[in-house]
Each structure stands twice: as C-alpha cells, then as structure tokens.
Amino acid sequence: MAQECAVCKIIRTYLLFAVPLLALVGASTMGGGLGSEAPWFARVELIDLLSWGCLAALILIVAYRAHEEYYLPRKRERALAEAKAKFDEAAEQYSECETSEPAQESRSDHE
Image 1 (cartoon, rainbow, N blue to C red):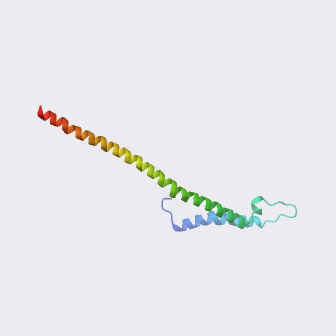
Image 2 (cartoon, one colour):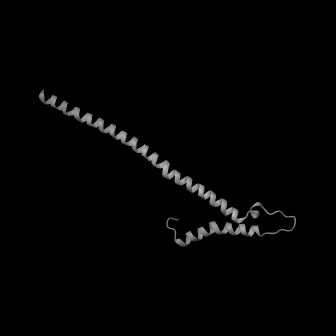
C-alpha cells in the first residue's frame, strides 16, 4: 500500500463511517415484539451519538493543539539551550587549547 489511489481512500472512508452508521440505523428500527428488549446500541439516539463524538473530537483536538503549540516549543527551546551550552563549552575548550599551543611553540623556537 505504498501508493494509494484516491478511489481506494474514498471507499475506505465510506466503509469506516457509513457502514457502522447504517448498522446503527438498522438496529434502531428492529422490532422484536412486545416483550423483547433491544440491545443497548439499538436504543442509542443517533444525534446523541454524534454529539458525544463531536465533543470527544473537540477535546482531543484542543489537547493535541495545546501539546503542539505550548509543550513542544518549550521542550525544543530547552534542548536547543542545552546544545548551545555544550557547543559554547566545547568552543571555549578549543580556544584555550589553541591559545596554549602557540605559547608552547614559541618556547620551543627559543630553545
């Protein structure tokens, strides 16, 4: 499934959403006589199901966006500050080594 065609995606989306929806509608219209109790999913009102689904989706989207907008940038800033501190430390050590080497070379030249 490396390359998927648009029609395949539409068919999968249809199967994902439409088939369970049709099953709920069909189950809600089932009648079994006077004393029969319908299963719990047959008694669910479709609008209730959709409204709770929208509420859950809203909560998930807001939580994801908050994570992406607030938590990740702070985490990246901390990692960048740590990397910068390590780089500055390494650059300082390199500059110390570089300044001490010419002094050693000048001593050997004089001898």
